[in-house]
Amino acid sequence: MADEPIMNMMPRWKGGWGIQTIFEHRTERDLLLGERIANKGFGEEVNIIHLEGVYTWEKAIRLTAKLPYVINARREMPAALGGTQYDKGIGDLTLALPLKKYFNLDGRSGSWSFKPMLRVPLSGEDEYELYDNEWGTGLGLSYEFETFRWFFFMGTSGWIYHDNEPFESHSSLDVGYNFEALGSNGSILWETDFHYEDDGSETLLAGPAFYWNIDDLKHLRLEWKHDFHDRQGVLDHGNGDTFKLSIGWVY
Image (tube, rainbow, N blue to C red; front, top):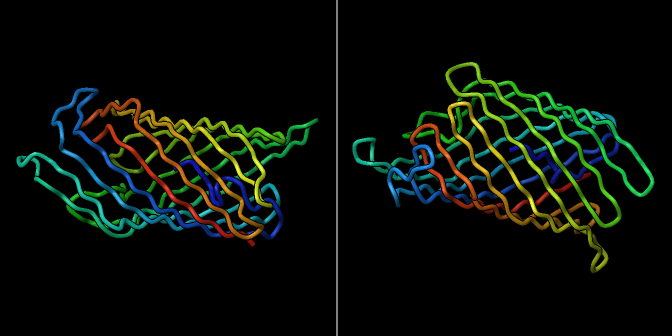
């Protein structure tokens, strides 16, 4: 949720813009309360298409928009709590205004970012909802740099909602190796994410990612993450895996 189009990479020039689509497949194996498995084998499966866009007014000022669409989602609950439930349809819109301060040093270049964010409720009323359907405001901070061969990123963001949803934060630490092959370039990364909510929920997930700058127009990204630590402050699903396939175009 903290990533920005296009793959946190583009466009860095005045008047540049781009669009990105992400297919996300997520599975959760167990129903948790705290770190304890309350109901083993009660799983959740989610498939989402994300449509994202970015426009760069100046090198340091961008506007981004992220809109998810739930293709299908299914979760298994005990019969007393409703049994198997489903979700489908549009999610909540996220708007952001990333403000960047770039630097160029000897053999290393990068940026600091400050990002005000707004969540716009658009999701509906299905048997259960992946998205909160509430107004929210957030702030993000990040630092990143690259050398000829290495990439480093760390960032955090926090959200406050305008109703009964808990405060939540998302933090990331990514380390990657840059390569050149077949006339193009890309990165192989190890990414670690931490999600926290003040109801006592926390998830630490990590895994590899592959980014390929196919040419000046097209970009491709694959990633897989596993929940290495999962704790749910309320009865909810956990102990899962996430796969994402992203395709982006910049102009």
